[in-house]
Amino acid sequence: FSLIISLTALRLVGFWAPDDFKGNYELIYKYYGFLSFTFYVGNFLTQAVDLFVIWGNIPLMTATLFLLGTNLAHATKFINLYLKRKLIKMIVDSSDDVLRSVENEEGIAIVKSCNRQTKIQLLTYLTLTYVTIVGLMSSAEHGSLPLRAWYPYDTTKSPAYELTFGLQVYIVCVTAFLNVSKDTMVTTMIAQCHCRLKLIGLSLKSLCQDLHDDKSMSLSPNQEKIARARLRDCAIQHQTVLEAAVLLQNCFSAPTFAQFNVSLLIICVTAFQLVSQTGNMVRLLSMGTYLTNMTFQVFIYCYQGNQLSTESSEISTAAYLCPWYLMSPRLRRDLLIVMTRSRRIAKITAGGFTTLSLSSFMAIIKASYSLFTLLKQVDEKNLNHGL
Image (cartoon, rainbow, N blue to C red; front, side, top):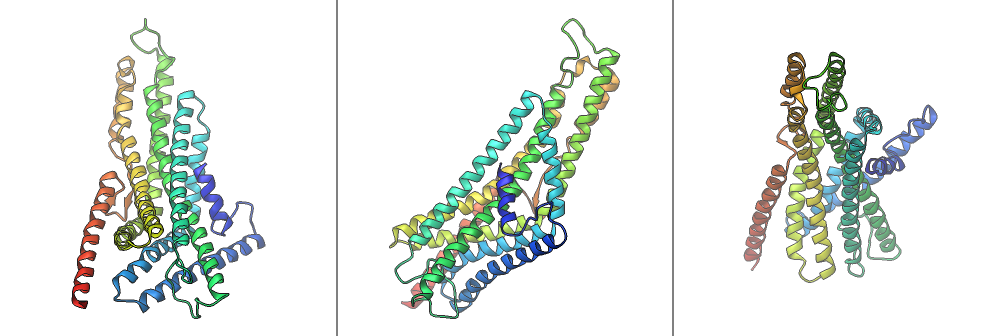
């Protein structure tokens, strides 16, 4: 469900071409995607120019930076998505084929649980995002735009004010949904990987299911053959998931690293804006939800990465829980090889510097708080000098 929503959103704005678009249709679609990207980049430039104009005024700079940083990370992820789209599509199709082919009840329950988790994640993310947008738009004072930006005309006069206000609302709503879609797509693909690992663990636990009765103390040659074939299939599936994790690392490691660095700064400047907005309660609440939203964005990456590593480390335990004592020495050795190989933990890193995990999430929050404290001290020092 989450992946369908994400890919549909990207397709609507020209960043994920339908499979049946060939020839002229494909060319027109690429041109449409280029125009969409140019339109959104143009909006980022107005914020960048405004930052240059107000440089040195920390409260105004943070008011511009908190959204400009999000947009820059947004553009980086767009470019990466376009460059890696074929590889990403291959990973999506591969995982989709595996998860749709599950037939046993326990396996279907695991897939449904994963789907439910990613669906809740998407709905939570969307709710936080649009509550923030409504707050930001409604907190604008009369005659002022909701977001700081520089335009080559007077935005205080009608109809320029109304048109610019509407343009900002449209761009923020669309880019926010696309940002949610891209983040959800990446984290859902990671979730699919750890769901596949969970299915492999289930297959290992039930390796000898329906192959022996309570009276028999060992497997017959025929049963051994079936168990070995099942074990071989588990080993192949495990290797496939490890390769998929490597592909995800190649596709999203650098953009995730950029996102984490930007998020670190955004959380810091948003917290600064939050303590500065004492006179506007609506603005205060909207900044609070924006801070929560940015924190949640980092959390879903770290949580799904943590789940991937956890499920990967539990493969050897799942193999041990199967009735290995019924197997021949040869089959036990094969099982031991699988257990040894499962010590190679699947993980995703941010630029090769830090693994996506809950400890990484806490490190980012602590670093953001340290920067926030420093920013407050600098601002207070500037105020004292001004007095």
